Image (cartoon, rainbow, N blue to C red; front, top):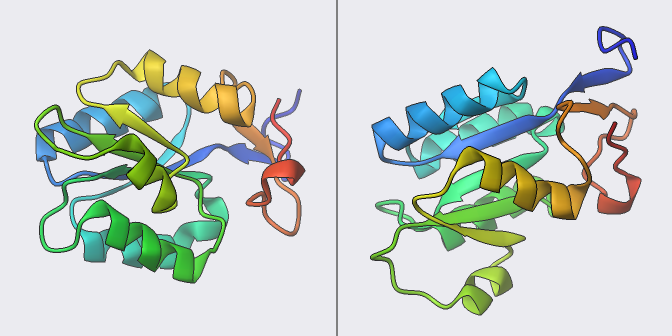
Length: 152
């Protein structure tokens, strides 16, 4: 497969976490596996990055416990840009919530911190198809429609 073709591009993540260490480790780990990564430490930064790059962002990994505006409000802002944004919440052990409530907020799943990067890729692969090669078929209309996604 020619992954340098204009028809293929790296799978893109927007990672949002106010913990600088967690953000750096997760972003570096995803990049090391061949993914394209945008990193944000705040709600506002996440919304700005998503506004500019949402055609290339396939999934958002969002810290549920962001200061100022929580993860649920951030998902709402992202959905205003792209209604079918594919978002997973990352939640710390001390955060109190019910997973069903987070899913009703628009999340596609919840990862409990700490988690291993392999767990993340496995969970996303269950819903999106194999991500091991980290490339997606780039169709002109984008790939946000879940049924239209084609992964290789």
